[in-house]
Length: 77
Image (cartoon, rainbow, N blue to C red; front, side, top):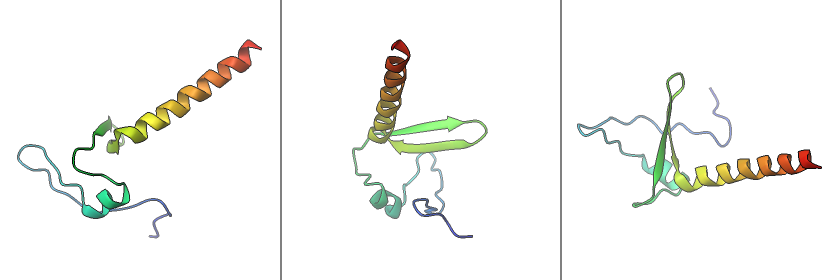
């Protein structure tokens, strides 16, 4: 199976005794994750969990709020 461009499979990780995982080096390099970065863990009971850098989520949230503000401005006209 060919993985689409921009999508990745970095392998597997094991959860340690304290619930910790190691993010594979290739994933850290690809997504510029450094020591001290803040990550957000999201969960969906059907789809599972996702981990993302908090600044990425903040950017997407800002884009959504900007679109909502733009749509509300259009409705006010």
